[in-house]
Image (cartoon, rainbow, N blue to C red; front, side, top):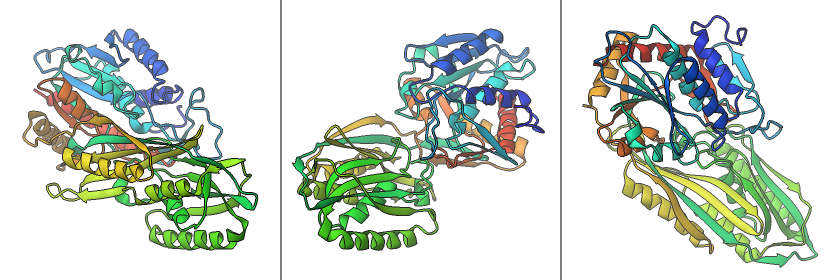
Length: 481
């Protein structure tokens, strides 16, 4: 660890992050982190509480002379999105994240880094462990399963939270104070396959889109990156006859899919037409995404045929539904320039045990628009005969630029960085909105260090930015009254 973080000022912070990186913490598997935090609390004489859902709340007394200051909660989540390269044999249930430093940038070998949101956990631990830190009473709220449905925030027990000021450290752009976020809704669709025997004059094909950047479906949706599922569906929509027998694309509901494969049977006599259709679609999409996703590949290979596949009519209808289903930015905000208002992410497609399944996530700062785009997506799937459920709704967080905490944060940042912060809202979902709705009177702000391409194997974290944000957080805590 010392050589990896050599030359950095806050060695204690990086030691905590390094330790966290050794602990598996995919959403739903936070027990190791929970025990790590409880051992940390015991060592540092902190009050520690585990609520019924598994969130950890730690409390630290005020620095002498700061006892009359208001209690402040620092908040982050314990889990991380676990994505790896196609070639990696990494096991997220057992293996540590292998950290790699490149100058001021930290990333991981062949996997997501877990800076989202492990760096928040490390920064909070560093502040709690500092006997000389000047602040009023502190709470630390570490939630579970943020990445798979904001589960911990939804189950916060309001009577266990003493603070009415909350600093969320789950943002990814230094110098930006987020005071609002989008609400979200997911669509789950299922379609039982109408299996038929594959004719003897058919052969098997596998079409794979790969090499895409992927990324966070809230934080990167405006960058117009390619969606691997949409890339394949578009190509297959131009294939005349097809019987699907395998589909696998996407990994998480809040990740833009970077890989997708669909296998199908088609008449041997149509091979040339299929190859030409795929090549034409690839050339078009390669050109369209030349700037936003230059690594796009689309490869057609032979595939071993099973005995049965979905009927040609059903396969055509299913591909058509994926082709027409909304994905990407649906509307930009008219109130906050440059901010996405409404978007969709066609996140996951599978064909398992004779059932096609599709998962999508939809976001908007206007809840009626969120519901509208989700239902439009749902209707696209209904058109092929799928059953649809709308699940996982969470509220938006309405910006309040005049809040006391926002003013304190803006003042503190200007004093610390000698420049004004950007005060805005974010299209991604943040736990603040949910915690605010659960804890009456809560005032929240979210900020964090520079990170890029979270939820992808290209996730990167700026080391110097982390240290600046850590210093800013300490300064903020010292002036809040």
